[in-house]
Amino acid sequence: MTVKALERIERGADPAQEKAQRRRETGAAGHKRGDTVSALVAEYLKLRPRQKAIRSIGEVKRIFDVYVLPVIGSRPVAKLTKRDVLDVLDILADRPAMANRTFEALRALLNWAIQRDWIAASPMAGMEKPFESKSRDRVLSADEVRWFWQATGAMGYPFGDALRVCLLTGQRVGEVTGMTRREIDGDTWVIPPERAKNGEAHAIPLAPAVAAIIEAAPVIGDRALVFTTTGDTPISGRSKAKARLDRLMAEAAAKERGSPVEIAPFRIHDLRRTAASGMAEIRIPPHFIEAVLNHRTGIIKGIARVYNRFDYATEKREALEAWERRVGAIVSGEAPANVIELEARR
Image 1 (cartoon, one colour):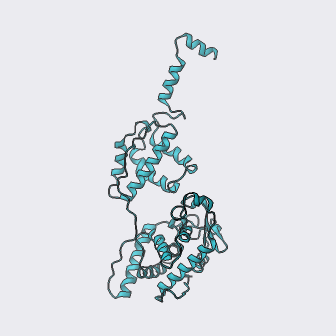
Image 2 (image 1 turned 60 degrees about the horizontal axis):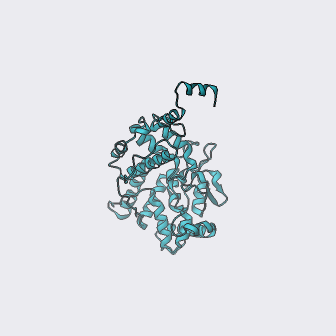
Image 3 (image 1 turned 180 degrees about the vertical axis):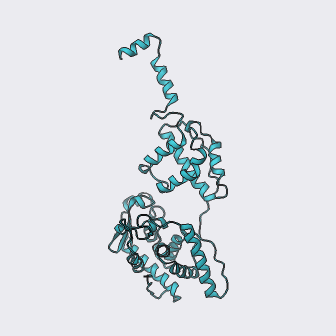
């Protein structure tokens, strides 16, 4: 004990009581009890890549920036209440899916805050998701696949080609639009761990039509993004592109049928489900489809997943080539059993 500490004790100071008071004012990690939600989010986003991600760090940051911080960013974390959380979620009352994602992001943030000693308990304890999650089952019919192909051909590069790759490979649109030529290794596209949703590198064999689309794409900028207009950033404006896709598909359908056709709404992500369902329809085994989609739950899981490191490279290639032939047959109007090569737009 130092001389100054002894002198303070002689004057009546109580070091144990002072230490307890400091702990009441700050967490064990040194965070002040007045620190705001914005400060917590900043530290969370900085450290979270080392945590198991619920979804990509970019998406989580966008949720906080757009929906959370404008409402409760200035609130002290220690004084955060359930009402504050509800204020955030109430704004998203007409957007069920985003409300649920924001709920998940906030819950993960506050649970992490407990682990890091920012707070002792979460104000979200006992709260349930604002909306019941509904599993989507929308897949494109054969007619819709044909109209989709005509529409994407009219759209051209970059969105039309990127959307075709989404359908033919079954990969997520963000993974496709972020593709670089450095990720292409011969006849295989390797999505690096930092770009894959589950944090694991994923190899996708390139069937002929996909390889031709990539080869035909212009080289723009130093980063060599496959789908870009600026050279250094992936394509943006997905909502406008989807609206144009819908319009062009409707035009293709009306031209083919001779009258307007009502096409049920679908999302770009439904192309991934369409690919999976299409592969299942042509009798691709489900564990090979999971390997193509880079799923880590389902047919192969638990301890079996730990010991099953086989990449199914050959099986994935055969599955994707078979699916490409199926799409080619649909697009051409031929019998599905026929092998029709898809010509990439150049």
